Image (cartoon, rainbow, N blue to C red):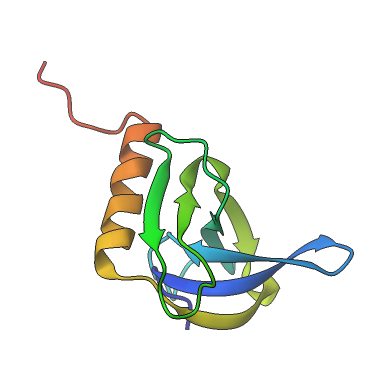
Length: 109
């Protein structure tokens, strides 16, 4: 069952290249397509509001961040192996970063 906050090894189709990605989309068992919107977890930082610090959770080898600017729709069958779950605070911060990125905040007008 694909749920937000779960971290997977994802097959991106690049000659055996797998990336750690976190599911950010909601769980929807009746969605018309078997897709999850995911963002990569990386140790490479550029700074700014598009990166969410994760720190070093048990399944990561170094302090890491989520790069929400690189979100991708991933087919469920490309989610090869579940690695772990992010802390709720990191998931909430990722959702806030998406709100910022897409300018979804309510205006005062």
